[in-house]
Length: 412
Ligand SMILES: *Cc1c(COP(=O)(O)O)cnc(C)c1O
Image (cartoon, rainbow, N blue to C red):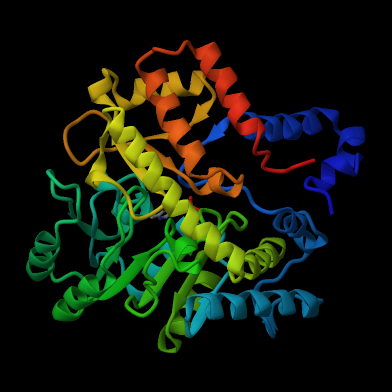
């Protein structure tokens, strides 16, 4: 099976050259620039094959054995395999693999446990909370009463004493732990203890670290949280989508919260691709990958610190790094622009201290490409050179092309 079955089958090129051009252009962009967006990865050819399969044609509202459409006997098997693999991979009693995205998985977790107007305690957005953790622009901020905890301004670490104090004061119905930018392991046992003390549910939004959990490189929230929500497309390296994990006692509530509460028909091609990704994640190769992702992030963080950037929390336990580039004379926004001109793709993020924005980087994609510590050290020097404007952007672009050229994400 080829990497891009549709393109190589020539069907699209013949029928719709305009779109074929766009798809090939994106493949070229992904393989000729440096992918440091922390939420991205390169899925395998097998995952892409499942995504591009005729399962995309099948309507399948409901759950295996209880669908609202005929002809589901084959896709039912695909969903059962995905569920069983997810349960085994994460040691969960129940898994729901239907959520279309990480955000809709969070919505389903809230729908399973909460009523509109309930109080929820979550990491505040300025400290790395996700939109679904109470942003006024999101359903979460409009339908629930969110209280935000923060991180220590000095250390950048979650302020556990503040979490406990806010929980005691506000008596939330649920506590959410999980972040889009927190580079350290989350102490799930601590959050469980506080949730128990105030009679709250614990929801772990493990969208980012769930792939590290699969590879044994980060602590597993499943034994601690009432409901774990996650994405399947970040470090986990599956198709774009979401999932939920919980104990048997909440299984029915979680399933009903996904369908019919938050969505209709399941996307069976994506569910099959999730099953493929779970299968890949259960292999020794993926365990090695997950540990290499973290080793790479540590080297890159140390390299950036050596170049004078301020690394939040002083380092990382995960694939994520956030830095303040201000000591090099640029804020995050300007830095991102300069790096983009050099072919380095990454995001801005909020910083725990101060107003200016920082940069968020991740090593999931570059590690999939096969890069290791040597390349991470090289990237650290390259980034700092671009930010200091010591390397002009055309030369930097050449160096990026040279670097990524040795690690094609889809050889051939
Ligand atoms: C990525 C992420 C999500 C949302 O995932 P989408 O698939 O983009 O909706 C939710 N929560 C956290 C903590 C995330 O990092």
